[in-house]
Image (tube, rainbow, N blue to C red):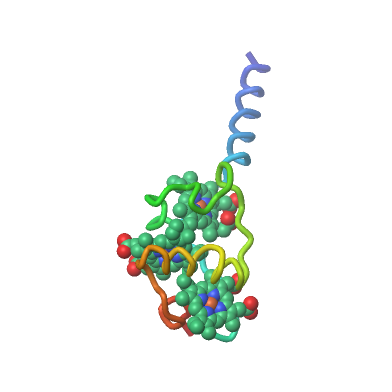
Length: 91
Ligand code: HEC
Ligand code: HEC
Ligand code: HEC
């Protein structure tokens, strides 16, 4: 019985670390133009693999990713979402 309880705790602890929960939104520093908010929850309906390779893999953010590879690129392609400096960057 004691062993079974310990095993159960081990499973719960493992599941907790393997599936890091997504926050509803993220905020990036964004440099001189001011910080950039990313409402994650509002983007989820687009489909996880639009942005994540594999299951919820971490995405390292920088200017090139934010502009040319992910955020701004998609907004331009879809003609939806912020597409001007001051719509993404807030001081
Ligand atoms: C428009 C792009 C985009 C879409 C679509 C998207 N995500 Fe994300 N997601 C991100 C970004 C950016 C982050 C924050 C950076 C990071 O830590 O990966 C993030 C973070 C996460 C994290 C936290 C990662 C961690 O280790 O902290 C999880 C889990 C996650 N997303 C799951 C999902 C799932 C599940 C879906 C689909 C239902 C989804 N995401 C759709 C861009 C997206
Ligand atoms: C795969 C396409 C895609 C990617 C990648 C993407 N977006 Fe979007 N984004 C959208 C669409 C589509 C909308 C418009 C949603 C709507 O009007 O319902 C949107 C809307 C937004 C909005 C406005 C939300 C609101 O409530 O008005 C912000 C802010 C935003 N995106 C920031 C970002 C940032 C920052 C990133 C990168 C981390 C990003 N997006 C990546 C497609 C994308
Ligand atoms: C779709 C959203 C979006 C739009 C539109 C956008 N940016 Fe960005 N920008 C980002 C994201 C996301 C980053 C990465 C932020 C980070 O890594 O802290 C970024 C990074 C930057 C950085 C680098 C910050 C640093 O220190 O590395 C500068 C400078 C910048 N943007 C200027 C601009 C200017 C100028 C415009 C308009 C011509 C613009 N951005 C339009 C989302 C956007």
